[in-house]
Image (cartoon, rainbow, N blue to C red; front, top):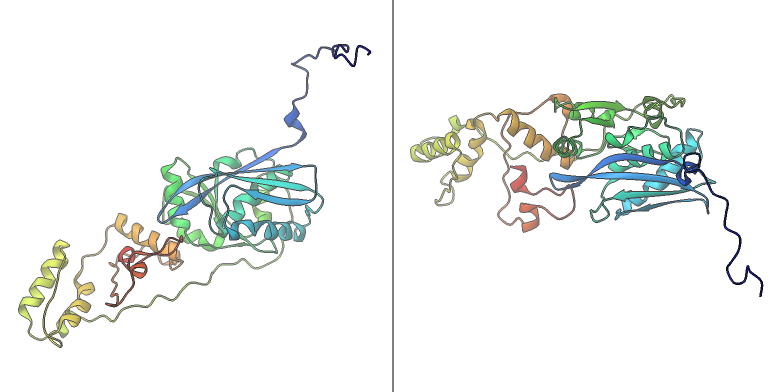
Length: 326
């Protein structure tokens, strides 16, 4: 046996710690932030991206749902369209905390910013302190998403005040005066805003998204009611004081007509209440921020055979029940 077999080989040369190159300098960890919504509240999500040697591909970890996992395909196509393909590199994207479900295409923009930082296409080191929200198209355009308003609320409460949102959600985001909002139309604009350099494609911005058409209940004016002095008085007291009201009577007595007159005598909403109503509509994709805050009280008329899910909502984000909408 020789000395090497016994493990007595020569010790390595000493290394000056101050002059040694750190192992992490071989690649950059890109960071960005987003919000994972759960109902009208949420949690801040930190997005990390790393480029490493290995088989080409993009891995996303951290409890993503199907729409978040599919963002890797949208991101790959968008970067290729913008002239920055990643076909020969392996990207690992981590969404923390890993115990919080990540749902929806709104994570696309944050994931893209973290990847662009990891690829050194972005020079700004402050991307982790900015909240990103938006869906990426295959041509790099940023598409509007639902839930921007509750995302901003959550982030402001957590101490964030800077946001990058789709240009189609700009009016909605500006409903909160404390937020510093940067609306963007394409991924190239994001790169340039963060100190990089990328040609902006000559494509029209996506300003609208497919919004569900709300079904408005039939409404009437209290002047249409003939007689019913006690019913009218009870309705006025309930509207003025914010009380619950139960009407009983024979069919055709006018209970439904009185109920449909209630919105016309309700007092207007305060600013905080109007923002809360707008937050619910944002989560459902029904909010048009260009019209400003709506101070009219919401009114819902559920059918007597409505299911529990229709009344209180479902588990999936964006499924808001009648009780929440009212």
